[in-house]
Length: 138
Image 1 (cartoon, rainbow, N blue to C red):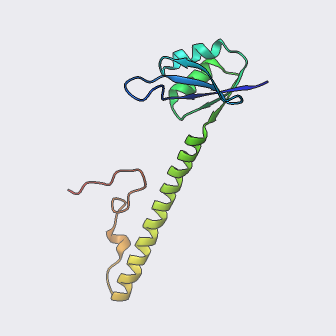
Image 2: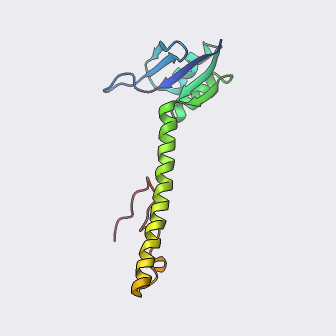
Image 3: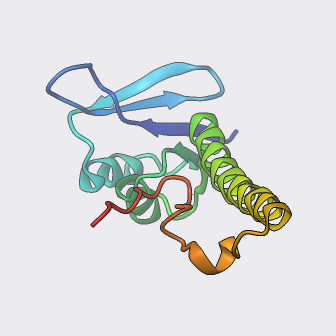
């Protein structure tokens, strides 16, 4: 029987963080590790050769821990991070689409009024992509 263990971050809200290891089939906590270090998680995984799947966050520490400690296990993104990836991608897509739509509407309005070309007067700083900080005015 394949057992899945997610690697999640919060051990306790506050100053200290650790790793919670949970059997996804039984939904029971299997172990608590004292830190979020790849070495600690990899050592634990090496002691459990029946580990076949690792559900983890997007952090590089847990990816390397799973590669080193359980090379036989498949790695999966957990549901929270899948949805977070989807949200960030959609935000970027919508921001680009809305910026292009805004530029077209502004150009159409200026054309009706006999104005100038917006495309020639705007830059990528006027429409930053989602997640990127806007450029500060000089």
